[in-house]
Length: 424
Length: 194
Image (cartoon, rainbow over all chains, first blue to last red):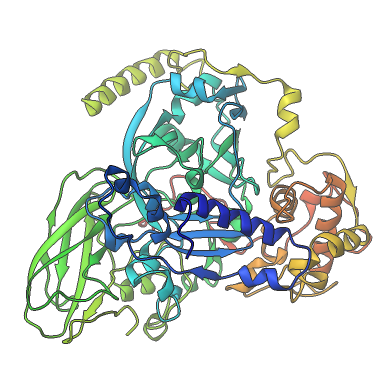
């Protein structure tokens, strides 16, 4: 590997190379890039060179990655950090274009128009001069934890918890409430939805109901105390708390207030999914996520430290608000005990849980189960698949789905190895 | 503290709404008077957010025959000859005169036959295609490529002209393939995440 230059520069170089690849005219070799994955590198050894090492951008490369001509994906190594804030350099990325845009924040404008009294254009200074909010929220790709990704062949994207569940991350975001901006433009009473558009090469677009926009959505320019990074939407993005992340449009440039859902390519085509319970029709316009949790350590691909004390730890979250309770089972769901929630516990954010366990060296199956403030309980795989209309037989095999929030079992073998037991 | 402030402003808002109810739909809070006004010309220059009834579709037109030429030059490299058997996203199912009507489980979802509205094809091709130079097709070319794909999918005739008036009227075979038929918010009462 190339050790010269910062990882960040190299990362940008990779993205640029990808763009170059896509720019090629022939249909041959460049498409080798599709589905290609990049092995996450081991954590760089700490060197005694002083504080600079504390912010090593090579960390970026620990995100398992997958590139194709129209996608750039990074998976957060959930197994590798504590607390609830994902280090910014490790935040997941699911990006629908060939290369990241190079936006000059001084020139960048956010326009709001459509069914409004006063169409306006806001500069970055305008946005930063307005009342700000800072809130901790998770983001999650609608396709995170897809049943289709379990199994072999993905190991070079990190251990299972990273490549199966690593399209969720949690940050402290700073920005201006969208309601403040909408008040400036004066929404007309027919304005019941809005459509957002990014300034990325593919001008990613997505519909949002006005009621949610007025409730808690904000236009973020800061993440974990620093400006947004390029892969997170620099200079501004929407944060739509608790809802599938495609709503949180990056590189936000235009908002159009409209009177009906616009069925953009993303919600009608890319993010809809056929389900047996509705006669094979496609469910579209998914909004908030249900209660969910996953044990991040110990988890598949890692190794048990040995018999005796083991701290089981993981993350729980819900689009429905605050995590009320997490239960842990070490016997595959036969018996449950309540885990401890580490503070802070805030709405629509990752919540850290821990559970003290003594491993007796015998086979065990570890699972966690989240209950949120609405009283909704995280389903088992069988329950979730039944909700979607799959037969019991079908539910034993991976099925295409989105908003997958079922419990994740990890099987601990007697030799201390740990395995993904979702479908085995 | 934050919650307290919110409760207070909610009360205040409620009062304002009652006072303003006979005249205004939405309560107005004080404004900060930031932001620069946008003229209709400026908005027209960037607004290509196409609605399902053809809202914001610009002038221009194209046919399947014209689209075949553009497609071969700009799209075939990824999507294959006539939108089939390419390395990325098979855009065509069925054939001229014979539209594909499902099932749409996985790969079938890439096809234009899956879209609930024909306008989505115009909107998406105009904004995001062709990779890596999205936005490099003229409006006529976008209409033409859309006409070509609709024709290849058996949805329109080869001679049909697609423009701002005709495109929204195209009857898509999978229009009723989505639940709920008309998206609403808040969503249905079951846990919304099901």
